Image (cartoon, rainbow, N blue to C red; front, side):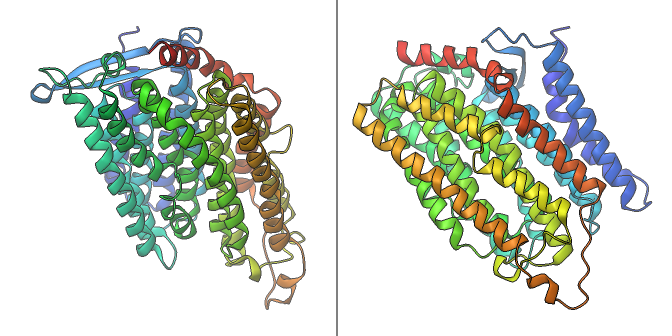
Length: 500
């Protein structure tokens, strides 16, 4: 049964099921919506089954491998596989995409195309997390660009074309560097191109060449993660996108860059990672402070949440650059934690907009009384975002803290300085988070609006919010549930890292 192509089915099912949407009978949007949600649920259940019954959690090696020759001329293989680092992001992708599809219920214009693009993104986001071939990784990395561009340009806000163009220019520009790195590594030092991750992990390069490869990959990941100064597409994109698209962007897309940084840069290019890691720590620390200081100045609610995402991704970068078991595990935990929290905040921001038709914070106020359920969920998830103890954000950031403090790579004084600046960033987070809640929910502005009548959260919104909130609490109380998945693989990566 291990030879059954489980991963191929998991990767290809959503996009192939998406094509059949165009052949469904014209009976309104309800049929299309429920068909798409059913496909997402089947995919999520299939993924869960494979991980529960086909995956050995105590084995750090690649499992469920599939290797099919695709294009002999390029030595290009359809090569998939999983390990402890892949599991969390793939399950997160399935969970968030299913809820984002359910959240997209108000979308009625071009419903067939919208739901097809959601399913195409599903395949495009699972692909990079399960690829074991560099060129396949690149193709899957590119697969979600067109769906995101169309979702932005067709279902976005007033400046949707500007933000969609900015998104495609940044991400396609970063992808050029990714392709150059893929081809350079694949063609170096052998008569035949070598794109297999396992083979490349044992390949050695001259230091100068390794640094060039590393830098090329880093630019691609810096755009996607995002890492400053290549982050400016993110607030514009989030500010204009429909909130179901925002859920996919914040919950999954940003995590692909951090995953690539671990999977390719750290695992395949350890010497260059050792050289770059002090600079990554500086960039991550600056990013935490910069985004936390910039966020309060944003009038647009979704842009403020977007800058909080940029700030929290700084902890992931620091964890990866700490080169310790604890720091890297903390970075992976932060990827999962922020995937839930970011998606939930954008969903609640979108449901609020559906009711009051306002996106600027200085025009809001007094929403807590007519919409107590939205107020409760938004406040709870804001607390998770500011790393309240008992929630996933606190555990993830705390583990990253311990990772950098215990790192033998850095001197004591730089470590003290970095942890001090990170602590300031954690203090700034409640400032922009709580001021956002105050401007939205307190005061009396909305009572002066003509025809004042707002509906509170319905069963669908409550269901989506609670489904995301439960894992946030669960990980906060019992983080070993996530950490146990990655701990063996992290140990294997670092032992290989230090041995080389």
